[in-house]
Length: 565
Image (tube, rainbow, N blue to C red; front, side, top):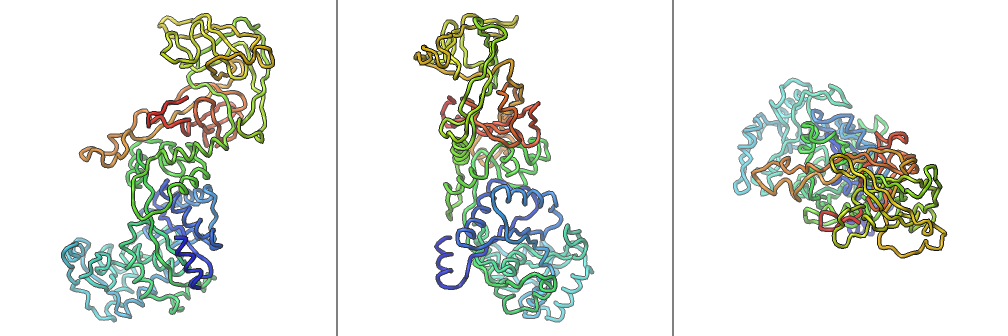
């Protein structure tokens, strides 16, 4: 792509690249769209050009202003700002004038075949299609019928305007494709002004031409549509038909018409998820997830709530690169980009997810002090914070074992472990409830091992984290995991539905404790909870007096055989 843009700049074909991101507002953007957004805005920005955000709103029955608002929010969140905000509906009058031009040129006709009949006439990949019996209507009859379509005279589906290209073409997209269909549906921007709406290929190509887009970047499924894209642009020839642009000029929109160049790239698909809008909508409608912004969803709204950052997504796109080969990428690429981003950017805090109390019996009941901790071990610029330390602590339940397995380096009965930044403790006793569950550990703090004391550097094999029971803040901690249990839920077992592979452990909500500095986080503030993982204060539910944290990603990839530290 860069080479093509450089060549076009060097040859003088363009003065600067102009691109566009053209989503249809019929759903929420997902991870795959992040690649398109980064390419559209990135290529333009790299070469001093500009990028428009254009909503392809030609199918009003499936579109909603809710999606429009979310898409605008997503693009800004990723760090990009569009040159102009456009809608395909801004150009409806131009599209219609272009349709009349094609009819007058003999390049389009009004067809009375039903949708089923059109499919029957189209032919197959190995057999040519047949001409519609209405293909040879006169220009005058076609114009009359098109204008009556425009006036709302006919019922939905009664007629279509079709391009007159070649029913014997090897590329089925060129077998007299539809350009306009009748649809008596109210549009979010134009109301009931239009009973006919342009088809995607027609509207998309002309929208690019109207806006002076120099490079139309799109995914590989549009490669077979490129000849039709070029046909529409060339036959309408907006650059030499200023009369078609008169409605735009009357509204003060600039005349930027030109001839765009379409370039295709592979889609971004990750395993352990689905990207189909239809399937994502089903997950939402069937209550299998908690809405479009559920942190398990691959939507940008969902992964943002999960704790993914714009910089992590841009890093992922850079690592994946651009190719002409569709493939199913390992989601560990995405997770790895987030780990690398947050390792550098996320302050450290202490939190206990599965708490058990540890009482330091040789410390006075009213003992407490503030210990100084670095906010980031690799960057002094993050500064320091004070963490309260007291007689009673919360530690992770799996940091203690009555019967330790081989190689266990944490706390055991009669064994010692270092409390992060506080000293060495020995476990002396275990208190259990009637069911035999451990409810309290009792230990002795080696006072000579406290910070600054002579024994502070005494060697000990294990170190565990903790939270003061007196000062820690109870928090809801949502432990998110991959939504599906198999890499390709669409095809692992053809006789099963993708919903059969939903991961029952994709979310667990536990009650844990966090140090006070974590509880005071702003919404969407990310942290590394030491020895636990990367977490983010929930975008909607978190409050300092009632913290809610979402696990963004574990410290290591536990799905590929690695163990959490």
